[in-house]
Amino acid sequence: MSNRLQELGQRMGEGFAAFKESVEAKLSAENAMTPEQRIRNAEAELAGRRAAESSAMRKLEDCRDESEKYKRYAEEADASGDGKALRRYESALADLAAKLPQLEKDYQDAAVRREACEEIIAGLGLNAQQNEV
Image 1 (tube, rainbow, N blue to C red):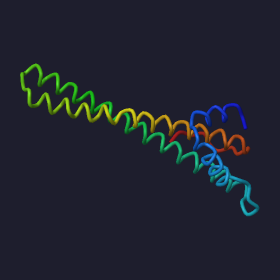
Image 2: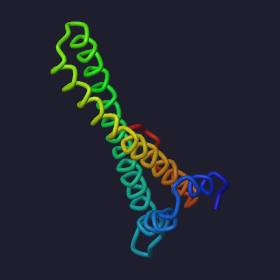
Image 3: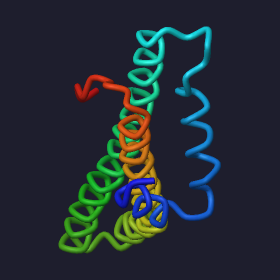
Image 4: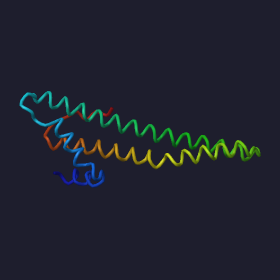
């Protein structure tokens, strides 16, 4: 196992071994698979990992954008003296702040899984295309 893959495994934690085995099983050299099929499978696996990472990033960015929006609304409500609206916006901000750490973790996990998938594919000697999704 490459040093990079070991590092990613440490970042991923206890689920890494099962993840690695799952990806390797999908991409392993089976007698019935041609090299082209193995490469297509590797490309599909990598595309799925990139899509998951992109989705997690969008959710994180949406949460941050919404937080900024409610922060502006709260400032406007405070400036206008509308206490009821201010409490509503502060409550919305608190809800978003509670979601943010999990969304950040989900994004980091997705990025590590994508990187690990790339390393596994490289370790198997498959030349999956490196086009971004």
